Image 1 (tube, one colour):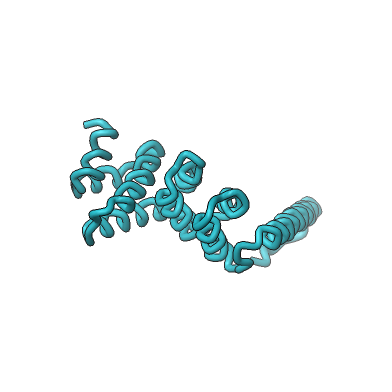
Image 2 (cartoon, helix red, strand yellow):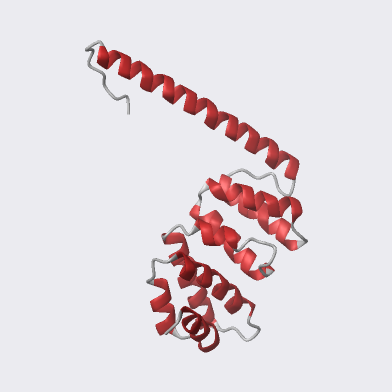
Length: 176
């Protein structure tokens, strides 16, 4: 059975067999399809509690495997707002700061409710809350990036110091 057929069975028939097969995969193409399938199930007007279980199973799997690539792809302009909202929630829950830039882009350029959702998810991702104020988010990110660059320099200097001591024959202990 093709990937397209499995996704169709999942979305149209709410097939738990298809869900189990798809969520057991280790393929980025499948992950992309799962993100879209979750959005389509959420968008269905006649949803029921079983649909919540399907979406939750997909969410759990995407978070478990840290599928940031397919989730970020789902934030594109060609995605529907429900799928984008689903993807933003998963990205914030994963907690990888690689999601900052695409979430910030939606905050700056998105429409209506998506901007508010992006601000909320940025808060969950970063543990800071600047609401929908894009200028404050940008300033915060500049400070964060500067701090990361400074830490990288400090780490390189510390590694050079340790290497120098080892070359001199001095025993070096790891402070961690």
